[in-house]
Amino acid sequence: MLDSGFIEENFYQGLFPYFPNANCCILEIPVTEAEFEAMYSKVKFFCRNPYLYRYNLVGVLGYMAGVTIIRQEHYFCSQFISYVLQETDFWRLQPEFTRPMDFFSIPNKRLIFEGGIKEFIELYWQSPALV
Image (tube, rainbow, N blue to C red; front, side, top):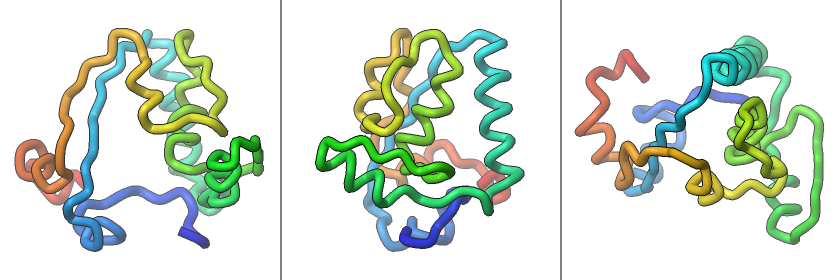
């Protein structure tokens, strides 16, 4: 975490084997075609340039203290998702103060799954090649 950058999560290696009982929540969010394209473009840029980004541990500590700490090219998980969601008409939260539970305030969202990551893998993940 201290030296990590933008990474693609994987259920079969990395941190997951150390936290096999972790829980997760999957939401489906309706967006327009233009919003989807704008968000997808942002994510693709990150995926093409992962070496530019780092985990924002200082930002997490600032969040916990109630202080905004903006660091260029540094994101913690919910901060990154909030940054991407800024491409929509409905998202107005400041990324530096976005908590995972804030995503439940998204209008017209649909809960796809909530539970253990192990259960998610068993129920929904068809092939390790998809990870």
